Length: 270
Image 1 (cartoon, rainbow, N blue to C red):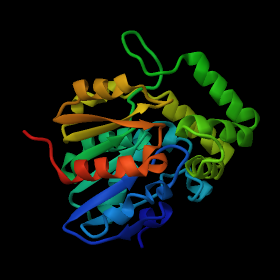
Image 2 (spheres, one colour):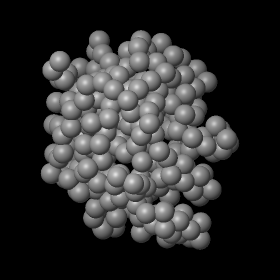
Image 3 (tube, rainbow, N blue to C red):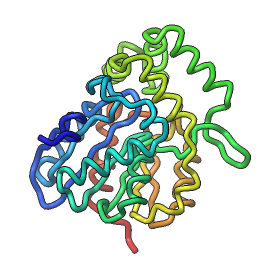
Image 4 (cartoon, rainbow, N blue to C red):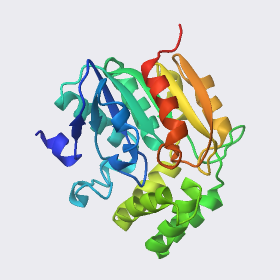
């Protein structure tokens, strides 16, 4: 096993001519794909990995300077694909990893046959003529809550993000993976993610992109998916699902899995 492979807890399952890479978002790890993976292994070679900083990774490997922008994560994706000698993949990215995949595809479009973006946003902060869903004060309060009592913040944020209460299995699961992160790393990653702005990069993304979004998502308003669609440099398509929450693949797999499989299997008509 290579250095990058080991650091990111890479797991390879299934077999097929095409390779699918599943990339998780903030506060989760590769377990967020547990409902999807069984539907892929008969047709595809599936690559699962953990982003650096996830609770399942070694915190000693987390370089605060490298991961001060999303570029550090994009370089990780490219390094991983190169180490595994993957010549082309379908990249399924959830939340911030959708944008990480998009950034990586600008540098190395040859490595990506398509991007499937779930709950993606190029900017979470509202701006002139742009609705991201958050005001500056909202984020400062969020970061302060993370600083003051991380466990309490996890217990409060998980139900809001997933859509449900702490008796819901999917909320418990997200709360668990969120709390598994080292608090100082979680705060740093949260600040980088929620304060990121990669809108200017969208026109440079030429790889076909399938944008999948929940009807109601605390972190990403529906209008954001249309914004991405209108500003990408390549072909794209949007599907808004009748689901709630930022992690629909975890909370509503019965709805999301068929949608994901359709977008993975079929290409956008030219």
